[in-house]
Image 1 (cartoon, rainbow, N blue to C red):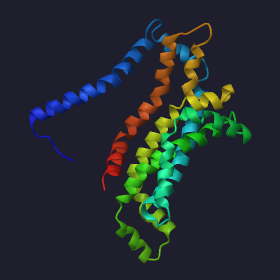
Image 2 (image 1 turned 90 degrees about the vertical axis):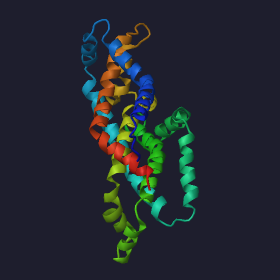
Image 3 (image 1 turned 180 degrees about the horizontal axis):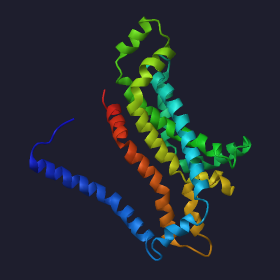
Image 4 (image 1 turned 180 degrees about the vertical axis):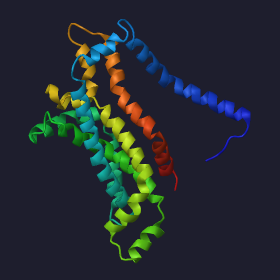
Amino acid sequence: MFEIRRLRSKIIIQVILALLVIPFVLPLIQAVRSSLSGAGWGNYKAVFETGVIPTYFRNSALLAAGTISLVMVLTMLAAYGFAKLRIRGKEVYFWLLLAALTLPEVVLVVPLFVTATSLNLYDTLWAVILPLAALQTPFAILLARNFYEGIPNELIDSGRIDGASSWQVFWHIVLPLTKPIAAAIVVLTLIFSWNSYLLPMVLLQAPENQVVTLLPQFFVSAYTNDQTKVLAAAVVTALPAILTYLLLQKYFERGLSAGALK
């Protein structure tokens, strides 16, 4: 890290950061303002009067929890193997895994639909949890591997000298040191899964299986398009992810910065 001491440099940095933030903040401010247009707070009242808020939020919470659990287990184990274990051809496997990052989600919709139907998973939360976890895992492994490589090999060697197996070294020595990057991955996966729209729209059909990102559809149909209530629903949908990020911001930033340093 470096410290800026000159007042002029501090002012320049502040101006640059403000200019970078404006394109992202202005649409959010306009969305909140527009959600209060017309009926005002009545738009939010209409959102809660749909009666589906508890069900949709519960499903989104289950979706996020399942995705986070799968991503964390797969990421922590795979990153440890890629960073610290001697595996033949692991660099080839790693780059093949990263190649999955180049595939846009929309390209996978048809294969995922066919697979979910074949496995009798269509219209269940698992039909969305499994693809979301698969899509998020490569990026999470990329972050976690950089963090694992920053852990001194002497710690692992000392554990092996004491007779610990690779699993014992991972569980008792390495894993407790990964809390910062684990927190960052949890936040990123939560935002990714909570805001998922395309896969739930395609793979979930029954009303009792819907998630919060589909809430705005209540106010859009062939004959109505109430954008004020759509924006109100969008604001309600975004609040849990925003609050979670604010609560875990310290750990999130610490994890990303630790993963970038060796």
